[in-house]
Image (tube, rainbow, N blue to C red; front, side, top):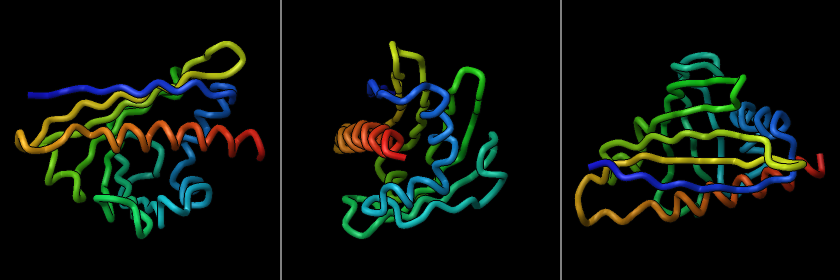
Length: 150
């Protein structure tokens, strides 16, 4: 049975600026978050369009995971929205299905980042993905801080 979880983060960056940073995450995230990402590689596709497959290699010391492979399912630049699914990596041992949707919306002088995940646990022993939620929230806040300085 599928479950959902949501993260909402208010950021100071303008929606289009934050969205472009998300869209450029293949190159940007390993530079900005070396403690989290060793590298992000494009395995299939152009890195930005639906059908793209990316291999995320996590930095040593990141709990539970060493790598993840994700597939971009849908992209809508006009509404600043992207969805992707997990197709390989340690997390597939815990979750039969794991899909995330990210949307950047205007919010006052800044933006609101809405990140929703839909997941199905492999069994009842698997914990809720609270660490994934916490990591997403911290990443969006830290990215906003980076954009304010650069």
